[in-house]
Image 1: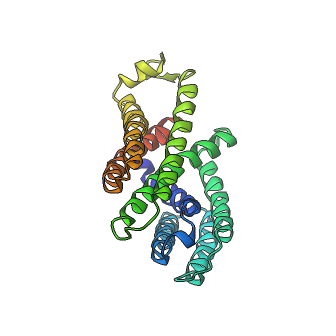
Image 2: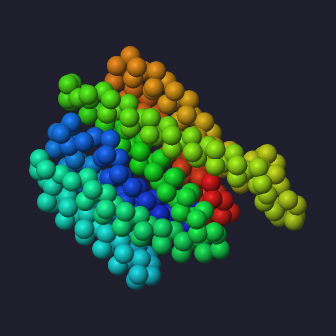
Amino acid sequence: MTTHLADILIYTLLGFAVLYPFFLWFTPRQKIDSGFYNFNLGLSGMLGGMALVLSWATGMDQIHIFGIAGWLGLHLLVTYLYWNNEKISLFVISFISFLGCFVFVVFAKSLFPESHFYLVIFTGLISQAILAGVMFAMILGHWYLNVIQLPIFLLRKTSNALAILLGIRLIWNLFHLQSFSVMDQYGRALSVFQYIATLEGFFLGVALFFGLLVPLVLHFFIWRTLKLHATQSATGLLYISVLAIMVGDLCYKYVLFQNGLLL
């Protein structure tokens, strides 16, 4: 994993940063205070800045550096203009994030040139959207501790969207793993169950368990908890979900960069 550490960090930070602002659609400006927008736009910009610094420090191709810098400049400009502003256009924010997604996809394709383009797009966006979504839901849940009158449907919609993303990834993984085959050092083709029993395959098992099964179970309880309007309990479960998804995502990245498994 250390061989691809810089690529994994840039891939994760950039994907998270460009997709994170899309989740602001679940929290319209008129339903929440400006501090929430300031924090989340600033978080996205900070992580995007880290991706830019790493891409420059590791000697990445100039086209990727300029692409990241261009998106980040636009994002920071909008963050500055919308700081504490009552009139915020989610269409403008989303358009800039869409440009960032284009930069992310081009970068991801350069990492996996032999993989099908549509698979790189699909798996990259889904995986990073899940990571961004669970973090957004956790931060939103924490906001209820400070703003008591915040409508609960905001957190419910965000959690439901995250559960849908997890469901899509589950279906894709089940479909993809049916035709799973990896050659071992002796030239034997291993099925998914045989591969998981190996040392390298252990990471795939951890990815599936912590990155999919645990979050799906947790989000069932989050859904039940939100029906009781227990936002503090739901936020606590979201904290656990964040940790599980981060562990699973790291292992997903390992099998992706090590074996090219687009899951």
